[in-house]
Image 1 (cartoon, rainbow, N blue to C red):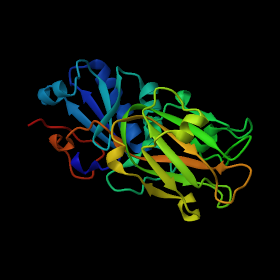
Image 2: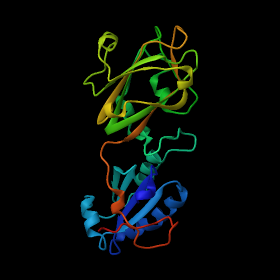
Image 3: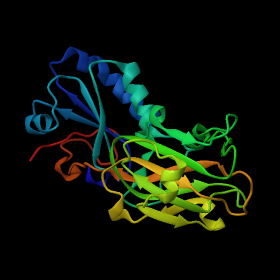
Amino acid sequence: MATAGSKLVIVDFTATWCGPCQRMAPVFDTLSTSYPKALFLKVDVDKCQETAASQGVTAMPTFLFFKSKSKIDKVRGADPVTLESKIKQYYGSDDGDSCDVAGHMDLSSFIVKSQCECFNESDQFPFANTQNTSGSYLESDCDEQLIMSVSFSQLVKIHSLKIRAPLDKGPKNIKLFTNQSTTLDFDRAESGTAVQELELTPSDLEGKPINLRYVKFQNVHNIQLFVKDNQSGSETTVIEYLGFIGSPACTVNMGDFKRIGGKIGEGHESFHSR
């Protein structure tokens, strides 16, 4: 639906003659109740053959996942456990950070945590702490500098950053690099030409969006942040949360999806191809 905004949209491509589809129908109904902030839609592939073909659906049931007009994942087959696992992955939670930027979304679900690196992180307080709401934090080790490398599962456009940190130990000067083949070392980060340099103030460390030069952050596969110093000249730098706001680089026209049945406000809808 064109009005879905940044909501998670789950689309069930189904058929009346498909036995596994009928077995999954009550599961899909239950999930729509359990995850009310997501939009659950149904497509009858016999009535919407062009739509199914345009989305690459060749077997039923197939469940496609969309966010901010982008197809982000799919589940094929009647597998309730995998379906709910994917919903949980992209759904988020009430205690997570909201986007706060119209037309964009929190990109945390696209971060490949196994491919993230951080140089000069403390063993006790590593980078991974910036990607959850556990109340812990990242702290530098030998001095105040950090290099953080973040990889995404697909190309993204980054509109802004969100940083939460103590007002005295939070980062001050940051250099941003994109699509590097390897993680920079400190010498290369210091001397290299950044895509953008930021000088943060204490008010920037309260978790509000810090706008980037959006045109410079299109088609980003990875981003590296070189923290040169902190606000007070403390021996170590601390970051409680690091988030990215933007959108997937490839999007679909959600206006192509039209309701063909049911009343407005119902949890299940169908797509109608033009």
